Structure formats: C-alpha cells, structure tokens
Image (cartoon, rainbow, N blue to C red; front, side, top):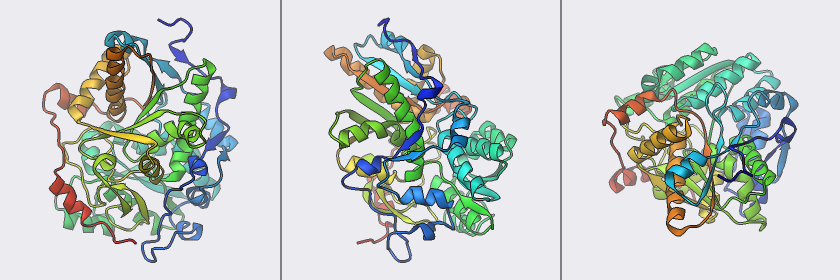
Amino acid sequence: MDKKIPYKIYLDEQEMPKQWYNVRADMKKKPAPILNPATLKPVTVEELEPIFCTELAKQELDDTTAYFDIPEEIRNFYRMYRPSPLVRAYCLEEKLQTSAHIYYKFEGNNTSGSHKLNSAIAQAYYAKKQGLKGVTTETGAGQWGTALSMACSYFDLDCHVYMVKCSYEQKPFRREVMRTYGAQVTPSPSMNTEVGRKINKEFPGTTGSLGCAISEAVEAATTHEGYRYVLGSVLSQVLLHQSVIGLEAKSALDKYGIKADMVIGCAGGGSNLGGLISPFAGEMLRGEADYKLIAVEPASCPSLTRGKYAYDFCDTGKVCPLAKMYTLGSGFIPSANHAGGLRYHGMSSVVSELYDQGLIEARSVEQTEVFKAAETFARIEGILPAPESSHAIKVAMDEALKCKETGEEKNIVFGLTGTGYFDMVAYQKYNDGEMGDFIPSDEDLAKSFATLPKVD
C-alpha cells in the first residue's frame, strides 16, 4: 500500500467548488445548436421559457461563459453531502494484482443515492426563485426522480414524476421514496396525457422508455399554469451543474500530486460522464494536459458506439426541440430485459461533440458482465454499486488488468454514480441466472434510423 495516499481523499468545506464549469466555453467547435422543430431555426431563450425556467434556459444556450457562480442557497444544500470523497480502491487493486492505481469518485453518500441531486437542487432552486408552483419530469431507474422529489420537498414545490413503466414495476422502493418526499409518480406511458395515449396506441403493451416519459412530462408542464419541465440528464445545463463532480475529483487528485491517466464514466444521457470529465476535457481542449476519457454504455442501448450523429427529437412523442447527438432514433425502446439503466436513445450534445472530435473513447458492455463486475466490486470494496455505475467499474477493471500484463502504473479514475440498494430485482435476476444479454440487431437499428428527421 502507498502510505502517502489515504483510502479516502476528502476536501474540506472551503474547497468545495464555488462555480460550475461550462466545458463548451473551451470548445473551438461548439455543439450544434438546438433547433425549433417547426422552423428548424436555433431556439431562443424566449422559445424555451414555456418549457424551462428562464435562468435554466439561459444556461442551456450559453456556450461562451466558462464559469457560473453557484448561488449560496444551493451551496448550503450541497454542504449536507459535499464535497464527496475520492476513494483509492486499494482492496480492488490487491484482488486484481494490478500495478494500476484505481480511484473512484463516490456520489452515493446522500439519501437519493446518486449524483442526480447535484442538478436537482439547482433546478428546483431556479423554479422556486421564479415563483413557480411546481415541476414535472421523467425518470428511468428512479435516481433522478428520487433526487428531484427531495429537492422539491426542500423548496416546497410540487413534483410530478413520469416513471418508465418497467422501472415503475421493477423498482417499487425507489418509487416509494419519491412518494415519501411528496412527489406524484405515474407509470409512463400513461393514459393521462395526449402523447401517452398516442404512444400506447402505437406501441400496445409497451414497457416504456425515457423518450416516452419525457414527452408526457413536457406536455404536463406546458398545459398547467405555474409549472415547468426539468430534466436529469442530456441537457447542457445538467452537465454544467454536474461539473462539481469533476472539479472536486480534480482538486482531490491535485491535492496529492496525482495525474490521472484515464477517466471513466458510465454513459446514458451524459450527466455523470459529462460532469466527471468536464475539467479534464477542458485541459485537453486548452492544450494543458492529455487524458484517456472513456464513455461506457450498455450494449443494449449503444448510442455512441452504434448510433448516428444526427439531429433527432429528444423524446419519443416528438414534442421537444431537435438536438444533434449520437442517437438510436427517438422511437428506439430498449428491451424490457435490459436491467442496467442507461436507457436513453441519445447522448448529450456536448458529449456527442467531444466524442466526434476524438476527445472521448466509447465502449459498450453486456449487462451480465456488468453485474459480474458489480458483484466483484461489492464483495471487495464493500459498496453495492448502482447498475449504471457498474458499467464504469467493468471497464476500469479491464484497464487495470491490462496494466497487470504490462506492469504499467497508470492512475485510473472512474465515477461511482451511486448505490444499488433499490435495484435488487435486477441483482436477483443476475443471482438466479435469469439475466440475459440483449443486443439490438442492425435491422432493429435501421428501422429506428429511418425515422430520423430530415435536417440539412
């Protein structure tokens, strides 16, 4: 054991970031603008205001301001669970007999169990500041819905969550945490909205998708006065708020003179990955340092590794603006057998552009291998990881084993986005040998790609 590096590297309260970092400001080639689907022109703040809070709409479209001050009210809330620790995985290193040094940034030390709270409290704050009654949103596995319900409870806001139907049925405990914090939770697609009824008619018996739930949440927000829609991933504003993860990780490494060789994050919509890698990508963009940045996604929903870089709707109901991103098509619905989260059909425009520029690598992994890695990590490091995080664990272990073969002492950093204590149905399927791997065929994807909108 390297006695100079503690198991857990903590920052003190004064070292917690006072500003969010906007990586778009350092990108010479910016992410393509969001388009109004009616005019195919870049959207304006005024056009987004019926959907988002005004301040969040401004953050969404700002690709030149490098740093945004974090309001004191948000920092006060952050202090309840931030700064979060950067942990040296000594036990995992010993088990793998690797020469690599493995670190993970642990975001599960709050009641929501994940990193999602970092943006939830920010979005709830701006809704409250604007004088709104409440917000609507979607959630997949439930981490975002849980985090938002906590944030809305803190600011005394109504919270209506449309939860992907298969997750609503498979993860009742996370659903009940949301209700405990006062949220109204509806399985999606539902019969409560026009778009939900349309999706149910078009896809009878569907188990739902994040794209479906987004459509319903947006409709609910825009048809009820005093409400706005908020989103837990994909959007640039969310990556901005989540930059606290990467900023703290970078500060903790710097505190002990550690230079990361690679930074690994799970990738669904891009919130955790984008937040974790932002300051490292910023250094690369400015020519100050070089890192290997790796996005890990499920083989059953492989937007980066098998998707198309094109303009697409952000939702299945096609009511949201168009974003240029790596996408499988807004109508793509992952198999109900896919239990590892990360179910969104597209990827953040910021992450997509960084990937297209070659600053990020992408890998897809099958879910049985993901849960095998999760089980190994839980037994060795003592934390039951969220299935989403376990995608990053799998690749971090793979990279550590490569170092074992070569003898290289690389510093591997990955994001442990949260805990898996409400994901026990998925763990049960794995333990009972009932979990399989679903990989969409080229024909499946071709059908979905055929529905992409025609944008010049």
